[in-house]
Length: 340
Image (tube, rainbow, N blue to C red; front, top):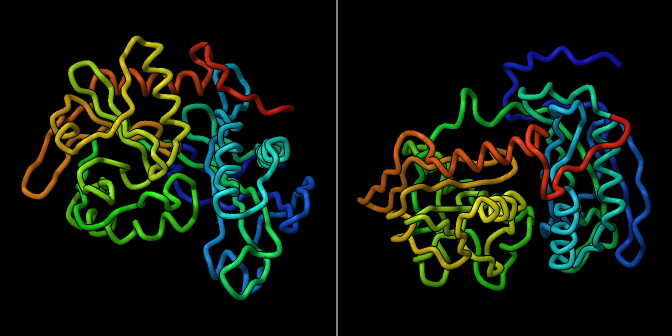
């Protein structure tokens, strides 16, 4: 098939319909089998599906890149597979074996390879979904489950370089509570954040910083991204206590910073610590790293500057260079897609 008529330079982080998607189904006590590649399109589902009525669903997100070495690669897809397995256990769904997960991702990238942007123009964003698709009345696990994977080309999150963002600490809303599902990528974790995010954006902020639900004092996440701040040469990030998502980019940054000789501390990060830091940034698959220009809490505003901090920029450059195979992948994070 010919390459799509896309202006790669104008590509944004948005949905474009591609050629194929992957679907596999199983029962609650059955074993997953390799699925089928189907034309990208709408699916049929019961109005009584567990995912529609009770939110029994998970998703993941990753990217396939064209690299300096002329290959198409994924970034640590095994970690996405393992995180989805942990989420499936939490939501009482049959976990997808890592081998089937990786095979599905590779097939989707292979079948939609003409949609992968040239190096430096973006990436192919891959979205795996696992949900209770079978009908169920009453709060109980669904009788059938569907594992799907689709993809879409996306442009660079930053047009014209990294831009510092302004954030607002919410003292009214919380993302997750201890014992809940904040530590897994459940679909139900995201809709409640839309209203606080909309209100913050209406006031000129890029996103909300959520504090912990118990003491209302410690930074947990930035919208749907993990948080870091640098103070007196030490890089701090909220510890994994079950209320924040164990981000794959987060883990990569921790390893990368420690390799650079930076002390990294995973701990409770008070808003006072965050607002007295020299640098701050958030991270995730979409943007990799977003430098923070300011944080506002009530009438107080902490400013970090209008340009990314030195360490923030260094981490961003190093991580993206590994993903694009510009630098040596000393961690073994890059996963080449076969036959591409």
